[in-house]
Length: 269
Image 1 (cartoon, rainbow, N blue to C red):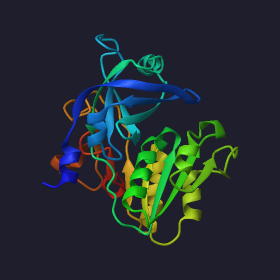
Image 2 (cartoon, one colour; image 1 turned 60 degrees about the horizontal axis):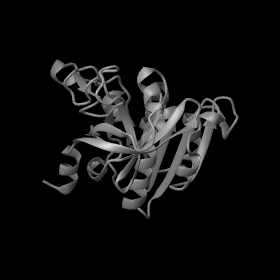
Image 3 (tube, rainbow, N blue to C red; image 1 turned 180 degrees about the vertical axis):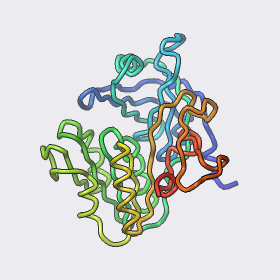
Image 4 (tube, rainbow, N blue to C red; image 1 turned 120 degrees about the vertical axis):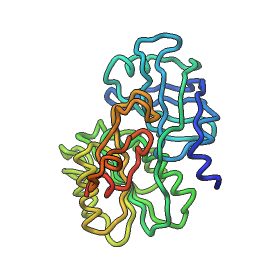
């Protein structure tokens, strides 16, 4: 068994320590956690299940969050406050212990390409920073570009972090930053020739990215989001239908276990 394969298979129930928990945008926070076991095993595109309370049962279920960044033994979690669980999470102070289960799922596959293009929309930008950092480290001589889209300027998050990895181009629905329009239009205009596409964001955006990639014969990986209760494939709550399969044994996959990263053609023909 290779080191890369064994690394993907490892996951831990680890009590980490909150180093920082800061607001970085409208209803959006970034938490930094000291979690050496999980960071040593993680791959770009994987996620953790976070217990937002210690020793309590409300809320009962853990929250699935993409690994946004890894810096030595610390990982970053970018999240939006949308309900009780994330509201409690945003109030957690520094030095507080926090229980994490991970790293979970199948992440991005980094292969040689003349051009790696990362396309994110909204909070879907979260896993792309760590991905970009790893591509830069593993493929230092290959081109990387990052295309980020949002509804408005204030929802473009942590741009300086992405700009430290590669050139960044922006698109906003209202034209308040970058190109006025969708990030898919930016992709069509900016990227020429051979490229590999990695995308995460709202489903309609990713479908548009995947369709363009198919037209231009670009390999494309998509990172899906789904409601999860367990994060390990036991609850069947994150089942999605695969494209082009009629056999029930092959028709469905679980975002938590088989993904969250898939080849675009596996989900959308």
